[in-house]
Length: 235
Image 1 (cartoon, rainbow, N blue to C red):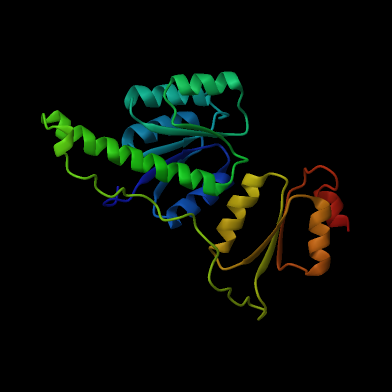
Image 2 (spheres, rainbow, N blue to C red):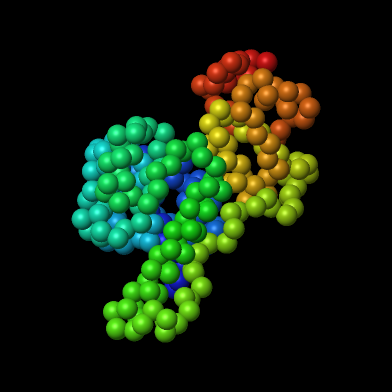
């Protein structure tokens, strides 16, 4: 860990998701490492001991619940948050029994995740401040005030300015996907890189936005309800 920089381990088999989320968290003041399968995630957790672990349940080698169980054996106080599109009430109950901090769908907004990380960071800092004087036999009323939590700034906002592209025009990008989490992560990722970003949650909306203004770059999901990605390309 670099000084007081909070650390995050992302365990997810989607390389693009890891890269994008990692880039956003890094810009928000976190030190980030990633693992693309469960065994590597356990190994990296044991070596690195991150402050937070973001864990997917559907992994190519072992189930995320098993990864969570092994992490809790290494550190019973580990702050683990499950982020998955592949979960059931039974799995959530299992995860909560093992002490997971939060259980989220990947369809949540990125702001929700950032708020959860910051809130957990504050709780951990407060708990640590309480433990030290109690261990020394001090009375609660004589405890020093808690140090300010070391956490990330607010969720990354839009870039203040846009830059000119090689052609001399403004760099604009249209992201088309029916999953809100994907739209959110990609939008913040490209906004941080000075693109002017527009988003569409379906093919019909994308065609309407393209008719208004042609983007410099189009990121298009193929599998969408209604007009799918192929239909958008054809038109």
